[in-house]
Image (cartoon, rainbow, N blue to C red; front, side, top):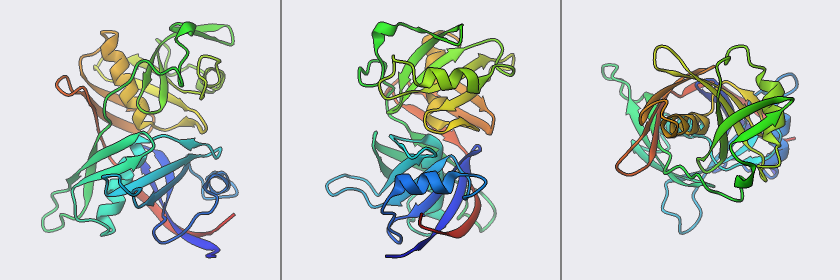
Length: 285
């Protein structure tokens, strides 16, 4: 067994993960690896671990992804990570396609790569648009609708909108986004009985310039700089509550993502950056 693997650290709008090509390196216990490697003081430091591999037999896709949060739990999907995978695959020469089908636990997503126009250097991916498919509003495995649209955490009541982008989100619009104690309320709401599988919690505020300022508490990871599926859920919730139309710019701590909820096919399209941070080699835990 290989006792060390080469990894790439990437981030999408500050949402940072460790990426490993499992076509080269086997990770026998990804949950354990995610916990060990995600620690900032004793490991690499990240929001989790992403494994890039081949799709399952019979699945019409080019590649697959599995994602494990910093606490070792496996996530269904991550929009920021999927954008990073598109950049990784193209710039490392693993594909020449600019439209990539990616198998995830929440379905096959299509990644459309936008290449930078830098003279003769057109091999750089500037941004990626991900077809996040249709949002879901009724999912008894993820949300007990008997709980209603209000949740109380530490004596404060929040009104929110449940949106599943494959993974569950509860979007709460507030008027004190910058001073709100995200960790205090998010950690309680994540584990509310209304969410059988726990939940990602978004706190959002419509700003004067039309953007939606959003801060995120991700299940399994805590506060993160950005969340792609969370940005999608926020944009959908804003449209459902007549705060915005079907197009929104979601300003998160790590950057801004452009979200379009297409009225023709009902799909949510997310566009944003992806960036390499560094590469290295790490021992298996």
